[in-house]
Amino acid sequence: MREIQKTLQAVLDKTVATDKVFGTSFAIEQGDLIWSGASGDLSKDQSYFIASTTKLFTTAMILQLQARGDLALEDRVSNYLDESVLLGLHLFKGQDYSRELTIKELLAHTSGLPDYFQGKGDHGKSLEDEITQGYDQSWTFDESIERTKKMRPLFAPGTKNKAHYSDANFQLLGRIIEVITHRTFCENCIDLITGPLGLEKTYLYQDPSDKRPKRLYYKEKELIIPKAMVSFGADGAVVSTSADMLVFIEGFFTGRLFPLEYLSSLQEWNRIFYPMRSGIGIHLFRLPWLVNPAGSIPYFIGHSGLSGALAFYSPKENLYIAGTVNQVAHPDISFKTMIKLAQVLLKGKNKSKGA
Image (cartoon, one colour):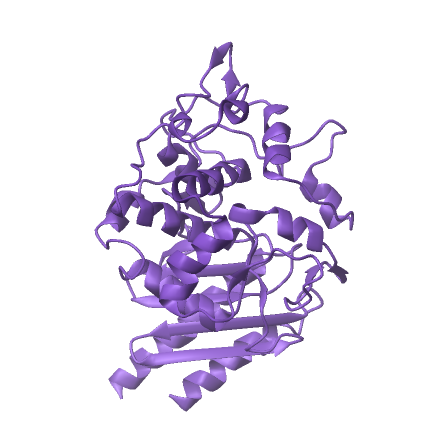
């Protein structure tokens, strides 16, 4: 077991030995083995921005509200959102679909709504472009929706085999959670997730002067964007540690947050970006046969963020993994690290069984 742990740490050390990643932190669990490690300018206890992995928190809240009978995934969002939010939200080929959008379509990114964050604005730049260039800025829920309305939808909601990743979907879901519960998204995060799971180092980032999370990197420079990180809210503002995220991802997939039987219904996959597929509030990471002919790399279900953070579960191997490489310019390195860590663990445990 000690040899496996040593090799797992070597994977992290090698990851920061390049000129692309300056710090990494990961935690992994399979059966009786739970391991966490860090390298570079990250420590095991250092908190960091999990970015869009936050969407798993939002999904878990929606599913809890469904279990309580407060909503159904097939509900139209017009049941919960003000007319000011809906007006002009989804106009596609001369038809207004704004009041036909459902909670399920928001979760699954099958709404057809454009992405207020990565979509191009009036000046040909996206918020992502501006922020990665160091222009920190804040926005409100209303401003994110107004920005969305100025962009063209991609398709009619629920179009078969169509999905388009949009942060606007989860801004809307965050507002729906607040409307139903009469509590802020932050309060719901505490009541429904961090409190029940005992996640003491996980919270919604709300104060730009909060310097606890490790600053992100974009290429070789620190990305100082606290105003933006606050603004993401339900689509990307959670701060956590790898150890806390390991507890969260296990809780998500073992029925501690919502009824376990819901999981199968979430796995309706649509292509979203290679090699990812979008389910209902979750993502599938599965390498195609051409790059994984022996099938030695299992598929994973969970979510990731542009920050290089991720949290996934391998049903085949009953393996949980969470971590970050804290590099906005190269979030793919986080997946490569996840694969290497999983392979080390699986190979080591199989070798131990053989012995």
